[in-house]
Length: 258
Image (cartoon, rainbow, N blue to C red; front, side):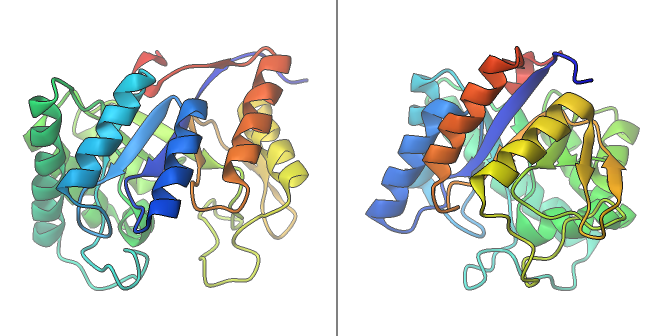
């Protein structure tokens, strides 16, 4: 039986390259409780960071940094050899830039969620996860580290005394070991609204989700990700929020979740 609980709904924003994409991000924001803003590595620039932070403030959302690999051709989704020192520097520089813009707007960052290949590599690589946690701890120990549920990222954050938040995905396929199926695989992205809603309900209500091999993963999550570049993202977000309301699930921003 499902049990009432609370959940944060986050979105990766500040990645838009066109006016149409920026409009799509703006339409999604009202359905979120937390935003992760690209910091100029895989996407975004100072002007877009500021604009996205201002939009987030209008809706009283928790604001986080979304640092990624400086590889705009693949939008930060191509894995590559990384040293822990490079990752620490990347975290400090990108998060620091967004933090400075936030300070000029009178806004404080609440969390950090690595992007794309950096996120997935650190989820399974202890050294890279430790480098990310070290970088965040050097900047501000109040920042929450968001990472894949059950991953090395969360273990590293906890080891460094950071508050961590386990993230789940209703529109991404999971492997049997709890990792996300790579986007290069045909089944990696789930496009059917009904299936996504059912998986969200299972994740939030039952701490469980089906893997691609048919097995069930037990995953407790604190935050659920919605992708702004998914076709029909706004329609899906509306349906998701309605489903949570109907089931008595409280939706609240990440830094108010505990």
